[in-house]
Every structure is written in structure tokens, then in C-alpha cells.
Image 1: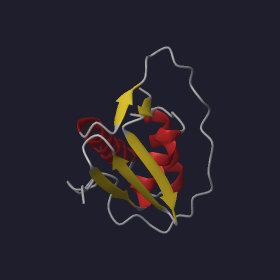
Image 2 (image 1 turned 90 degrees about the vertical axis):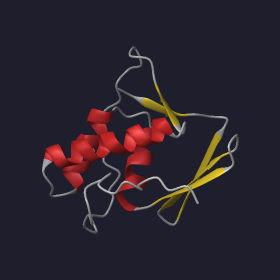
Image 3 (image 1 turned 135 degrees about the vertical axis):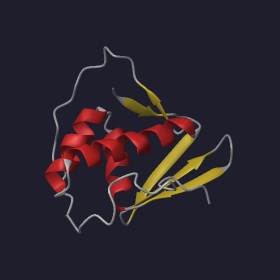
Image 4 (image 1 turned 45 degrees about the horizontal axis):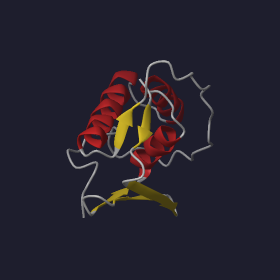
Length: 120
């Protein structure tokens, strides 16, 4: 499944590795760092969840199942908050492209914290 950012209600900017997201309709503000920011970048490129997981598996030395579960939890949170929506199934698949993210280690698997998406 692929996803897209729920524009025009959602605006976002990447600043020094931190993704700042603002829900203009609800007035909520979100900050994404580290792995969450990487996942966001892939969502922005309309990568599928499988492509996102594959990219993170390349970047981190973690069990694929743990990464897949974390990515799914994070995506579920973004959908629940109305930040992203699912794209139609007929949207063509993009190839996985490495962005050269530096592996600074992963504190926890993506989505392992219940507050990966925090409203400030």
C-alpha cells in the first residue's frame, strides 16, 4: 500500500533532519526525528510500506519483522491523525532508491514508542 500526505490541510518541512508537520485544519503540530523522519521522507515520495521497510532493512541491523511492525504502527498513527491517506492500488510502484541516510544507530525500532507522532 502507498500513501500520500493529506494536503492542503497538512504542511511540512524538513529542517536539520527534523520533519515539522502542521495540521492547518486542527492546529496540531508534530515533530519527527531519526527513523520517523526517514519514514516520512519515503511516504512523501509515495513509496509503498513494503518499499519503506526494505529501505530501513538496508539502513539498520534489526530484525525485518521488528522493522515491518514498527513501520506499520507509525503509518497507522499517521492515518489515525489524518496526516496521510492511502493511495489507490493502481498507482505505479516506484523503485527503492537509497537516500544515503547515515546510520547513527536506532534507539528503538520504528514505532516502538506509543508517542512516535507527538502533538505539541
